[in-house]
Image 1: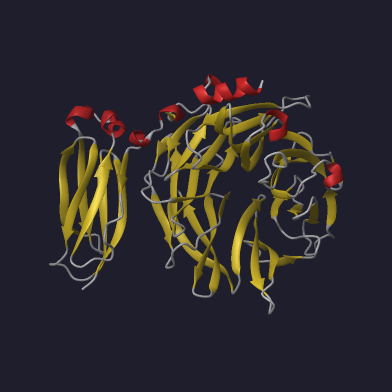
Image 2: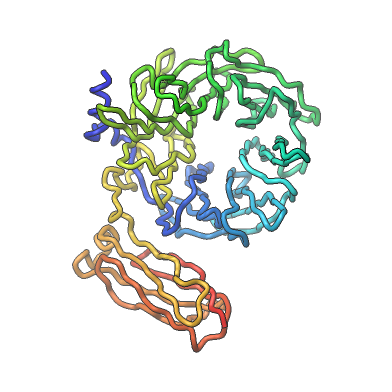
Length: 495
């Protein structure tokens, strides 16, 4: 059995091609694994991701048409945006993330309407580091849950677990004790608009508390799962959805990664329940069941269909003497069954990938976002507009605009970009004749100050020198247009 599974993974067995993928970001930078996807009431897709831990990017697909990539926020500090979450509320999109400037940490909110940025606001300011940001919503409120960390006089790190409501501006600090170390947490509403807060500890325990509608007083912490419930290992991550069919929460849990090759402690677990009545943890996937090698699970997410079927997605990175499997797996439990069907839906040839987020639309189609090396991808099973993941090599990415170097500069800098065969083939000119390319430089008033390229170019890598000796110092933008695609970046001329 083990050999069969590994051989299937190695040859790219057909079940691993059920999901197809589309390069959303087409980035030239090191993209963070933090990306979120929102499916609105019309099944339009909205994807937000963090670029270089410094910028927040956005792209949507409305009526099957992809927008250009937008930079909706840029921090003044490098490598400081670490967490992001998003929700739709009324007719707007709300994205929340952290930022830092000096010794202060901020909770930032961007509001978009019809794909256009409307406002950027600082919701909260802290002197402590802010991270691990999650969100939940009901019909009229978005609730955020996150942690702040601080050190006492003895340099011991402590954590405060914060719950903040966007519209009411109410804020609570969830009680912290020695039993709750805050390894992970998750806020969620049930059908009656009761707000639940689940938290896992660094031991084998899962706790919950709740806030009733109209109340400002949280319930007491209640342990709902422990090692005796089948966990048998420290918990690291949870994801949860409310199942309206069973009127229960469906939850996936992931145990911490162990470096012990023979321990098999790294597991994907499932439980379901409500209030204090929960099933024992069920082992969905772990190394000891099939594999005997070295590897890990990561980033487990769960979705529930309109018929009440739970679907779990997670990353597997495994290798032993028989081969390897680097994949995103799906575990699905058919209605009325207690057993799970497990199969890889995407196979990779590198371990430089991460499952970021999942979402489900009104047709019960699950959308995945994941990052692969430099880029964020969207993947699903039944989307004809997307590319086959099996063909996603470096050459398939349509075009890339690289950062100017040096930047800042005085007076010259070099701008590099690449055009792929995939982009040329979808243009009417075809790959041999190339694609129309324009590279222009703009000042902060939107005026063109230089046209560096304006001609058809074949697939390949290109570089252009820009000399700003005749221009005043300041901020400039350079924009690459290749066919119907466009991407812009910033550069600073020093004088």
